[in-house]
Each structure stands twice: as structure tokens, then as C-alpha cells.
Image 1: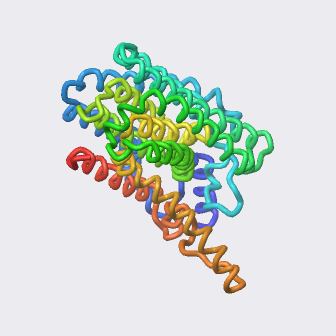
Image 2: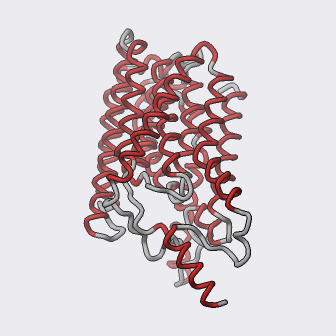
Image 3: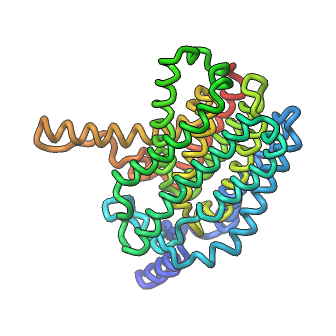
Length: 387
């Protein structure tokens, strides 16, 4: 029996699956197949139905944009993922036990983020070309997204080259993100400040305008890192981003914000994330890496602050922000107790919070499902609350 058990575990280790207890595999192949199909395609179908039901006058363009990005990324990914086999992920030694994922390709954001942005610009251009302010914001959002994506790509390539989990230093990475954020704010906020002040009447004064510009730089860099911290389980960050992007697009298409071009860019990026989920769902064939996560966070934040759509943005990205908060609390409490008591203590077993749940014996699928459910509740709140 021991020999059979060892052989069974070797087979599952090579296939990338968790062996589970003896006797649990019989008759479960259909359940596993259904679970994988739902994790890879279920959220895309659900969001497509949301666009179909709540798209309003933008219903057809929204669906076309979403489906175009989804299908392109899914098809291109089938070609790109095998080609990226050498870009293998390395996991940190003090992190969660993800040994079975060692060697999975990373930097998947290099192919799906450009598709999402460019498809979005193609659909949005007939609408934004007629309004200079919106055209400037759309191009600035694209540049900010690509800039943060390039910072992430440099980090991913250094990690791959060194075969460690240390790439670009955190201080340099944050500095580059702040530079990209500042450049975006200098261009986009100055060109579109009139619409932003209409969406946020509190910004009528010059002092409040300066405060908004300064805080926007921090928000863009912070959200970029928040998505990066959430990207720790197969399909988690990409699915949550798609949910948030659909909600943000629906809000931007409303009369209050009147930014249908940027709404189409959001729906295109949501479709691209869902297309990537076809390859990133559990078990992942590829990870988005910092290339994808830093770009996705920058896209959401720059789109929000560039249009004044800040309150809906904060609601829709609450899961990302709580993940980042869990890391801040963990680090802060550890340093405080070490200075006060001589020994560092922790609030969570591991941060971010999804790793704490892993340490509490939650399955990856259960964590992803719970986080998706939270994101969908926030999406529903965004639809029904007057924000």
C-alpha cells in the first residue's frame, strides 16, 4: 500500500494536481472538470450577462468590446503560453507551500494587457476623438498602464534571470511607479479637470485641486501594488479585476460621468482579463506576474482619478485594498511588537489575507470563490447605490 500511495503521489506531482486523501479520486474527474471550467470561463459568462442586462444604450458596443478582447486573448494565449515556457516563476522560501507550481511560466501580462488596451482604444477612438479632454485622458491611461507594466516586466525578467524571488528593489519599483503616476496626473488632470470638478464638486477650490492631484499620485501607485499583492492564487487577481473593470465601465457610461470611450476601455480590459483567466485559472498554465498585476492596478486607478470616478472605484476595488491593508497591518504590528516586547508578533498567520486563509486549510478554489462572491456583491452595490 505504501508503494502504491507513493506512486500515486508521484503521478499527481508530475501532473500538477494535489493528490488528496486515498480513496477520494474515484468518480471525481467530472467534478474536477466542472470546477475547472467554472474557474476559467464562469466569471466571463457571468460578466457578459451583466453587460447584456445592464449595458443600456451601450449594450451592443460593450458586448462587442468585451468579447473581442476575450476571444483574442484566449486564442493568442494558446500560442503564447507554450512560447513563454522559459520564463519560469520562482517562489519565496518563506511563502505558502506552492511547490507544485514551481516552474510555471510568468509575465503573462506581456501579452494580454496590450491586447486589452489596444482593443479598447480601437473601440473608444470614434467616441474620444471628438473631445480633446477625453482623448487625452484615454491616451494617458494607456501610457500609465504600459509604464507600470514595463516596471513589472523588468522585475519579472530580473527574477527569472537571477532564479530567485528578488528582482527590482522595492524602493526603486515604488519610485518608478510614482514617476509614472505623477506624469499621468500632470497630463490627464490638467486637461480634464473641468469634468472632474463636475463629478466631484468639492474640488472647486484651488487648494482642493492640488490636494486631489497629490493624492491621485499615491492612489495610482497604491492600487497598482494592491493588485500585485492580491495576485497570489491562480485566477484570483484576474477575476477580481474583471469584476471591478465591468463595474467601473458601467459607472463611466452613466450620464453623471459621461465617458463612454473610457467605459469601452474598461470593458475591453475586463474581457482581456477573462481571456487570460482561461489560461490562469486553477491549475494555472501561466501567471500574469508583476507585468500584469502592476499594469491592471494602474489602469483601474488612473481611469478613476482621470474622470473623477473615485467613490465607485474605492467600492469596486475594496477587496484589493483590504488585501493591501492586511499586509500593512501585519508589517506594522510586527515591527511595533518587536520594538515594544523584543519579539515580533503577527495578526495573521501569513499576509496578504488570502495566504492566511490558505494556512487555515482553505482550498485555493474556496478562497477564489469567496473573493469572487465579495467582488460580485460590490459590483451589485455599485449598480444599485447612487454613486
